[in-house]
Length: 88
Image 1 (cartoon, helix red, strand yellow):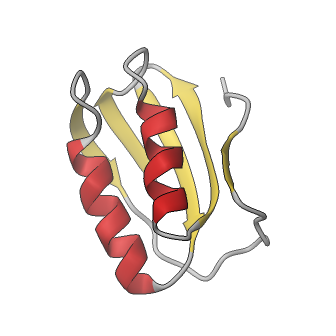
Image 2 (tube, rainbow, N blue to C red):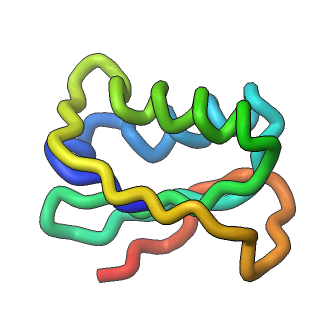
Image 3 (cartoon, rainbow, N blue to C red):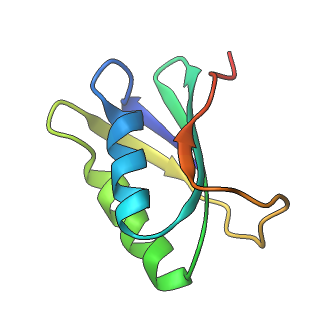
């Protein structure tokens, strides 16, 4: 999924990591530039839905204006949940 808005420079990626780990999800999060963050996550659908709801709110200084979510079976296997290098 890609989230856009005030999602860079506000701790959004680390917020996502903490929330994903709390829910037992695996995957990663990275900055895309241009006020966008990409998240890939795998886990039970109920936990993914709750995770998405938390991401829509974000940390206190963030503002999520739009979310593009594409639900599909994972194309890769993840180990834990972490921040990866940006895709810019």
